[in-house]
Length: 228
Image (cartoon, rainbow, N blue to C red; front, top):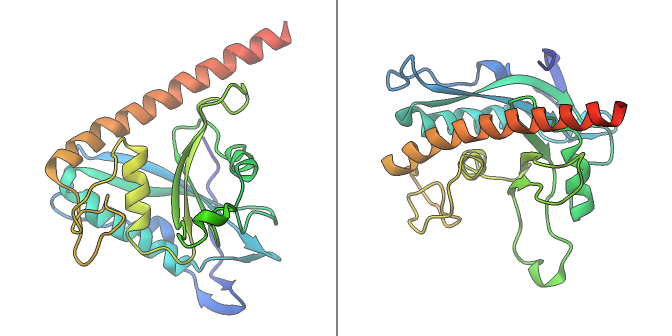
């Protein structure tokens, strides 16, 4: 289990002092979230600039709150299990190599690893006009130390619904086309998930836990073989 860390009472973001909320209390308690709700732990990895958080804690708290507002009717809840700070150098993630480097910080511990950074723009010129503000990343290559690693990324300028959108991908949802659906890149105004999407996400959350468990077992078997 990842150790519990607490954010300091005050932190700086982009050079200004701001009160940092307790992100672990950012969940939304609503009657529609039953005692049988699927609870999804999240470990937050904060990018830093010279030791200062690249994104204000208040903004991240809004992301978590907004995600829970969308998940609540479907019996899903995310909660912050741990908060960590990344070493210098991960503020802007632009290349596939950097994405693989982030995966090293996302072990198979049963939690969703959320990387909060400043920029995720692609380095390819023909995509320069399209700003990437969120990402669900899953390694499908052959490197054993990265096999089955996955995480989500949200950038500083992302809308409050981006975290819910990327968690939807992690729990198995594809993109939608309606503007009132969180899984649409064109989403506007009041948005949410459909009941069918909610059912799929509940099953997808279980699949994520299963993937994590299988990956841990495979990693242990590989480590045992190397020690022989």
